[in-house]
Image (cartoon, rainbow over all chains, first blue to last red; front, side, top):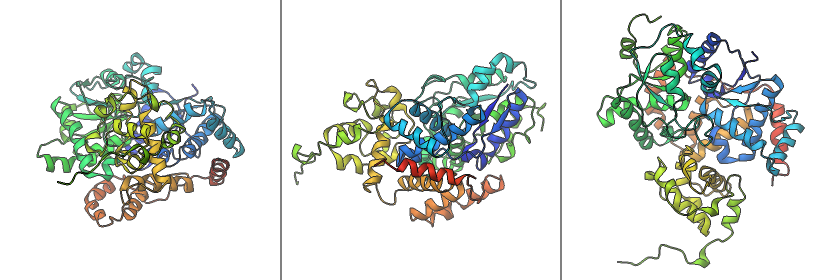
Length: 294
Length: 193
């Protein structure tokens, strides 16, 4: 197998190291080679589109060009990077005069792009390509007692809807079921975490994340499983203040899907970066029961 | 009670505004809006907005340039695309918000000291310069530039917890081939205006 050009983006190298830490061994265990995209540049996220959309598409074009040279498709675990690269990829293939101009600019800067690269999220690769049956065969430690709230956020399922439903996707729920866990009926699964607003306007951030935590708790989840670094970060950093403000105990571990899947594959908490959680994991561990490889 | 007129007469509007926005990418279908309000009722942020998305679209269509560009709504849009996938007229509402943000920044009419446009500009500047973003440095400069350095102190306990978990770094991240990035951005800029 040719594998994928792994695109970490800024978060997986800094705040969300546990995502990278867990994703790489999981893919190794599954047998899909990942090679970090050489000299990747930042995707620009929502920020660059708010300032200059032509530049935003061009810098994504450089990443796509690097992947094309390596002969691999891009694997982008951060939902923000995933959408930015995918949106730019679609735009560059649109034939619009602006897009053609950018393709010309890429060529003149020595990073020509022919439009052959696909941008994928690891969930797509695991569930749609490897398949749930093949994954089930690799589960060494089914997470039988664990109830999880699968949280998708926005950028993986919107505006492009080719991965799953825009309102009530199931791809992560299906993966967690394959790992032996029980997904709860999490009605807020694609509701907004506030994105970068949560860090900048506290009032908004606390309210939006309160809604998510409350819903997950009400449904009996032992943790929230995320696919996006910013969702994970927002849900973690707002918890203490939410507990204080709303006077409800909504403390809940927020884990990356690769950390939870990794446990089911028999990998250790240490390998999977569980120590990077700033939320206590005692109740979560008790739920897992013994047989947990520490 | 003083009677004030809140809506502009036709001659006070800017009929060219729609043409400017419609040219931006993703804004082609804006004229198809039927004012159904699906966007406003889907938006997780509309409760905080001065004008919900439906009104912003109406303003753009009818030349309320000042009101649309100075609205807080633009900066409260978190780009979650809920309105966009639900719009029965297939208007790319999130892309319209992006186009308005760019115009507001270009014309310098965005709310000053409001953290979001500052964050957008600062992150873009860093990426154009270094090719990469450094999360910690971005956050520090955001507090500094939105002139709220004292609020950083309130963040100290959280910062300490993140630091202990090995999730913070003060390193300035950069790509190796900055020359190529510079050449690319220069080529894009050329002929763009």
